[in-house]
Length: 105
Image 1 (tube, rainbow, N blue to C red):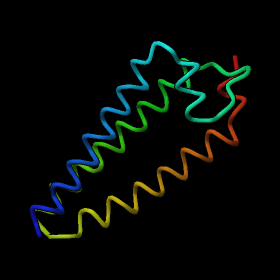
Image 2: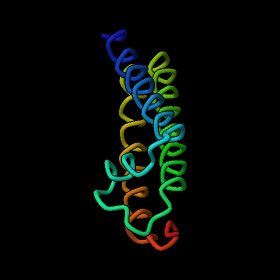
Image 3: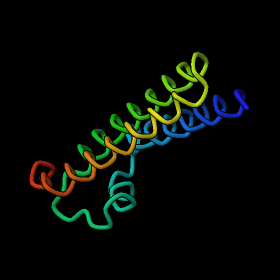
């Protein structure tokens, strides 16, 4: 059971890391932002991709930390990281909604 929980933490970290790298290194930023928001008219797509990619990479580091915590106390790491992940995801969504003018051209 311990291996499965640690594997889930590291799998989430790997997936989030590659998605974050995709957004940071994206050449077709309009398509990436269209994937995120559905509408990119008047937005600085490069800035949105860079900010979102960095945030997703931060989430990936959180899941790596969760894997380390799970070595010490089984199950505690994935619960703590999942709560922080949900909180950071809500903050990201609120930032992209309320501060939309910050990302305009």
